[in-house]
Length: 389
Image 1 (cartoon, rainbow, N blue to C red):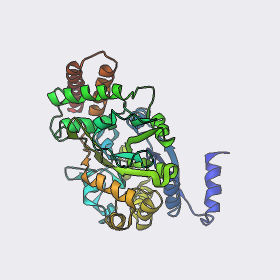
Image 2: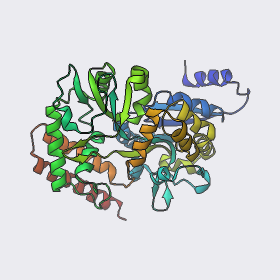
Image 3: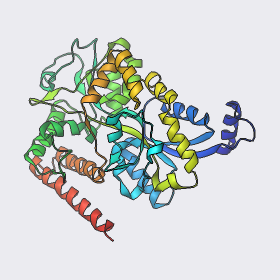
Image 4: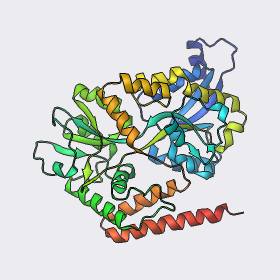
């Protein structure tokens, strides 16, 4: 059955009057919150908008959008982590002030602003790293990673996707709290040398090999083969279904006497290739208002179990949420917000390539830091040259 025929059936089932012209909007999204695509489709259809959804994992989002741009197949809209908004090659539309709800939380709004311009509509808040723990295996959340190295219980003490730079970043910020705010970003520092060296050594001590990635460590924790997991807020609903009342949430522990620092961002609706000024601008503006609506933001809190962007709904969550929700909100509010500077995508790439060199033993920690700096400087210099008239 063709996609068009399926869309017509959906329209009929949902009671959209015959003859009503429903606008089709192509949208690529990265959110892994269970139930999110269904929630998005349902609310869009209420506004006579048919969504042609394509899911792309967060790690691949940047490269996928650049690939689509190279063949002129960018979608009408994307929903992705806000720190990706800095990619100038994708030409995201500036969002006019009258399209932004006054109820958006100020902290969240700062995540989509660069200078005086706003480049995306916040949809979900969070994306912060936390410590999940199994109450049936550990009565209190550990506050130091070192204490977990000595556990002699039947299972593993703690797991996380060690090769993900999103989980390495809290270790970088523990060693160098100014890393994200220093301009230009610096990698060849004593703090980075300590961070990358300690992180790789810790991974070896905990046996967090590259053969067990994100899905693997999540399964280990769900099967109660590990007491603790470092993960993001996007998996709260999934883990609650598996562990029930045994699921606990806490801030990240310390390592080598310094607290690991969570970062936060938002899932944002953005419009590549200046699509907000294009032929579908009315449908895209309607979609933007839809995801900011009271009913949608309430569903984010109630149905997805995650942090909304609405001030009102955040206040309800703070007063009426359960223990896990309140703990997650507290971590979010203390986390360092991610920047949408255009160099952030380059920084992620430099961190990953440096990590791979050190984890495989190709470079020591000092040479790794210098290598990351070289990659970052070379890439940003080349980018600046391309942008000159």
